[in-house]
Length: 327
Image (cartoon, rainbow, N blue to C red; front, side, top):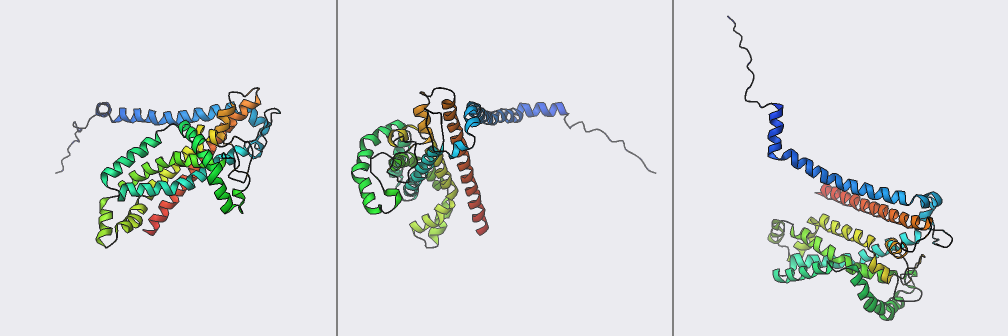
């Protein structure tokens, strides 16, 4: 004899309304919604920034087209504008500043995190962070009274005497120019490299160091062969953060680069950057094309920063994949 039992509904299972109310009371949905709004606000600000730059540069884009990027002519009297000298100056000074500051910054970070005593490391780290908080105009003033005379009387002539056969170290030495601006930038950005790289090195697990030392490695071998490779992504991140800061720096560079809208091979020659020309000329810009050209320079700087940071991110990804493949 077969008996059938009717399926009874599960009275313990909460309904849809009860489930949503419970999740809302728990805060998950509210927290998700609030943080989503915060994240979307970043995209909204970025989109608004690009839109304003795009609309503000409409007249310049319509008149010059892509030739605005490749032209070297900058003549407000005849309304002829080109961005190439400013792109050249921006990239040159930023890259040269990285070449100078990266070895110093990474070396100092390794010392502070691995080799210095605790109190000494904390004191020096405090000074480094204090240096990062100094306004850029202060660096510019100090450079005018110290670095420019040194460059004109000692550093420039010495470099010209030793490397004058290269086109980068030819011509008269005025004290102002690409090299002086790069030195100021390197001083301004190496605190960022030190701070972020030090934190990345301190985040390496202690077991990594102890294992290397247990196998007979010296302190330096453990640091250079184990700790630094383990923290390489954080170190590269600090370098690209400093690079982004160098690309957009304005006042200090404006005060020492010479503000010449021309392209020169010599590092002693005066030049110009995108941020500097916008800061110097926007207030005096008259007519319709002149302000639009300066706004388009801002748009070029935005996309230049975006492209360079994208390439940097791609380099980090490729380096990570290469390291994982070797592992």
